[in-house]
Image 1 (tube, helix red, strand yellow):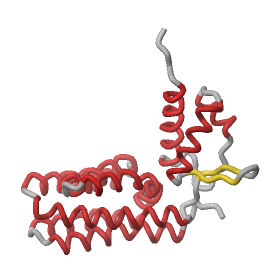
Image 2 (cartoon, helix red, strand yellow):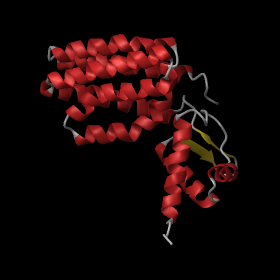
Image 3 (cartoon, helix red, strand yellow):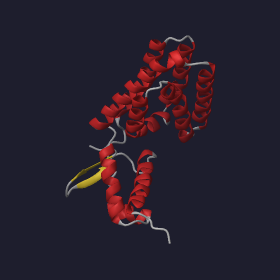
Image 4 (cartoon, one colour):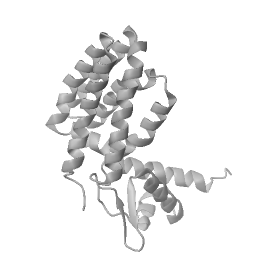
Length: 217
């Protein structure tokens, strides 16, 4: 019989709860009950509590002792802080990547933006998010800077809900044209212009954070 460690159960709970938060099944501001979550996941309360503690460290969950545990609203300082960092890192990534880009990279960006446009037209937010990730990942990986990559991976979950919200609204459609402008700047090796355009593209999330239609006070 194979031994299953407590850490494995915690990681299973962590993955499932994080996915529920980022996917919107657990909405911003929603109350979280560890007993109910444990029953839903078929786990004991211990790994669920450990997972919630980890998610609190990531800024996706917040709690007040003897009062509440809830999904972090979209208008909180951690979300805004994470967005500022992710925006800056993506701009830095493209600034570093442009001098290293070749035809293959540009083709990958165009193909990703094509998939992005198709997904948006079909109303497939999940596919649009995946294509958007692929588009920006060309520059992130091409930057050659492990700290940029690690920072983006660390803080993207906090802004993922804003991305999902943006792509489900009309302003999200504007990203297709913004991506085309970014590609054009990369094609002429204008790293500074590309960085400014990337910053503008990510700035649309800040507007949603300020509006926070699904947050809780």
